Length: 172
Image (cartoon, rainbow, N blue to C red):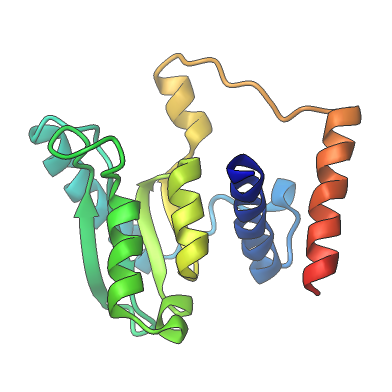
């Protein structure tokens, strides 16, 4: 049940990001970052460097409000705390505790790496607006020589597509 719910949240985030750009996932332009985006991503890299110096994996994230002001930042702390201490989780918790639903919706999370499933779920559950990331999970996998498989095709893909379509038809 939890796996099914997580899958639905991840799909919702993907669909929301595609709706905001009116593009299909396969058509999304990965080079549409503005100078402001790049400046914020640079701050994420600084936080990632601090994480690495502290013995953690190099990930850093920030939250930016609708006036382009950094309102919170975090770095990876999995070696200091728990395996759940991803910066996006900390920022999602902070946003849930400190911002209204409307403020969260108008907030952008910038991060040095694409969300893992856990962080994507937190982002979606808390209702944070846009996500801008520097490197993709696929890139990270390639850098680390980790085999990445997917997406699938055929019967299983049709089945999951139908489930997601059913879910969103029920919501609308």
